[in-house]
Amino acid sequence: MTSKIFSPKITAVIESLRKLPTIGKKSSQRLALYLLDKSPETAVVIANSLLDASANIKKCKYCQALTENDICNICSNTNRDDTKLCIIESMLDMIAIEEAGIYRGKYFILNGRISPLDGIGPSELKLNILEQIIAGREIDEVILAISPTVEGETTAHFISQMIAKDVMISRIGFGVPFGGELEYLDQQTLLHAFNARTNI
Image (cartoon, rainbow, N blue to C red; front, side, top):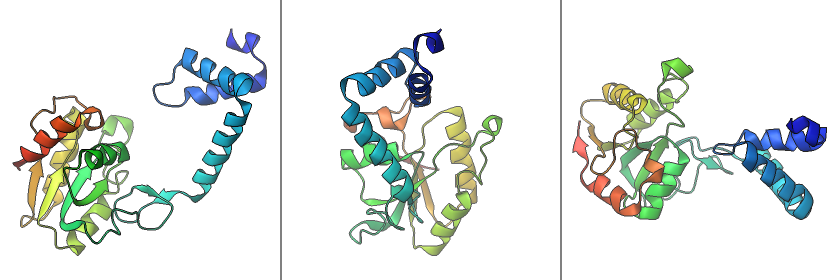
């Protein structure tokens, strides 16, 4: 029905927007019509910024965060604690932790969780790079800040098994419900979760 109402080019914009997370049919239609009808100059700005970013953004060689440089601002910051490594699922988790101001160490972003049904294994999460980082630094604590889902538990267990026994492994806990996503927690809950982390 949508293709009968809109021209092919408008339909293409709507379908492209629908590929974004949390954007459904109605939202994609509203966004497309707003950009094309009410604010075409905004559409051009967004398109150009996305083209520029996609051509120049890469992943940090250490933590896998998105950055314009080989090494991101956090990994290159000499004031950060090199002995602490917090393992998280996404850059959104990093943002949540940084905004809460509860951690001054370094990160490693998995960009997912182990999920055999979805074809995601250790290699897709770059765990070989994580292993090299842990082996190459004097890390005394690895903090697993992974959401307590079934896939998250599997991922946390796998990582804990691959880390050397002389490195302390802890898991954030208090206030994070099973099935909850770290990025949606408020700052106070995150603070309690970090302070109440337990050794594995």
